Amino acid sequence: MTLSRQHLTAAAIMASSTFPAFAQQAGTWSLSAGVTHIKPSVDSGTMTGNIPNVRVGVSNDTRVTGAINYMATEHLNLHLPLGLGFRHDVTGDGVLAGFGKVAETKALPITLIGQYRFFEAEARFRPYLGAGLSYVRFYKEQGSALLTALTNPGGPPTGVSFKSKLAPSFQIGGVYNLNDKWFVEGSYTKTLLKTRGTLSTGQTIDVVLDPNCFTLQLGYKF
Image (cartoon, rainbow, N blue to C red; front, side, top):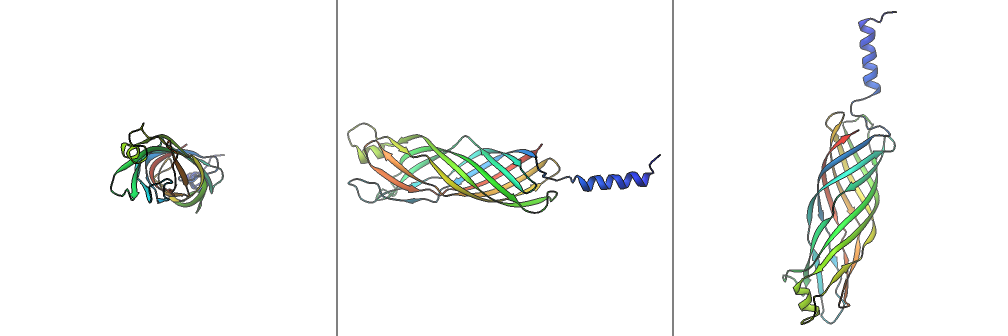
């Protein structure tokens, strides 16, 4: 039996309806790359020891980042950010306000977030809410000459370490599908993070960091 042109057209329409161009169906993987800006919301305690009101601030940083996504269902996406870490200067505050850097550190957040994506799988734009956990690893910490002069004048350089911590992360964002393969994604993530800095001279300082994370990336679906 030969199909007419009308039958073939109707079949094509039904196929396009069944397999929409922008579908983010269960089992879909995607990769993305772009930039991430980290802005800590610092609430510093005071450093223990004999010098009163020694507090700190923490600088922002922007880096190239990536992400892996896996659509577990048509609405639940597993989001794994990728990066090589961020560098932050720790500056004097309180009695040390305006004196400059007292230390520096690198921070590598290892995060897994579950996102709930709204609208249907074939929608061009899909906003989402997410929640997950971040393990923030601090490394390559180094004290400055100012810190040594403050805590160990005339002695060896003062070292510093920050405690790596597990913390909850919350996310809001959206995906805009450019075509059936390419998309743009933007998100804001808040991590509720508090750490403790410990000096080689024995003093400690507790710091709430609660970083704000702004990310914009271009992605490709497989």
